[in-house]
Image 1 (tube, rainbow, N blue to C red):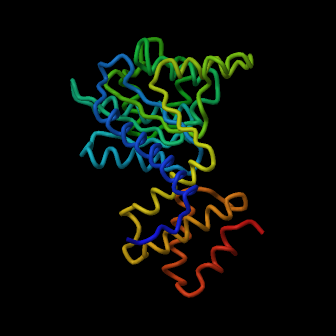
Image 2: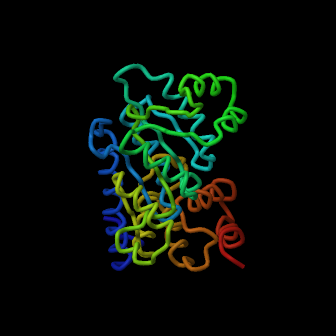
Length: 281
């Protein structure tokens, strides 16, 4: 039996990382089994950067064969978000439910007025209610979006778009505040706590050692990496990440994938490339 290149301490961190990986896998099952009729059908997934939240959600849809989902970049303004949702709502058939995945949603939750719109989307009326300068939204919209917006425009020129057939999945590097965080008396915390109370909040905080173990689990077992990369090189990359943790330009799954790509291109001097390109000078 081959002896592990990882000592007992590191094997312990890898086990901790495996537990967090299993939590992500359990989350995938929860997402698959949710229904718009549930009291809390929406998810807000937070973790430190670099742990593959986006990959996890997309893989969930792929493995479950879920085709009725729309990816929206959270970098959109609220006007852009409303335009996208109007077209989607217009296209849905009766009794059809649809997943809306907002990747890196931080940009949509920076302003109080935007948070208030999102609160109504997730609970209460389950719709987008917008009465502030709808002409600005129309001007920014494409022809298809304008047609959808006009369909949902009321007599007073407000816009009301139903979202009751939609399940929203948010991912973010910003954690929603807990009840204890409200003691800081920051107005934005109160607004964002209202979002937390309307979703299934899933927080993945990992201390550095567990985070390293989590990344190592992915790298050692990933089927997405080229088969030409030997296990020994994957192990070497994981150890390199551990030994240089405090000095790495980035500590993430993607960064190690980039390192392994250097191996495929420079198999003789890849370690030099690792030091020159991935470690802070």
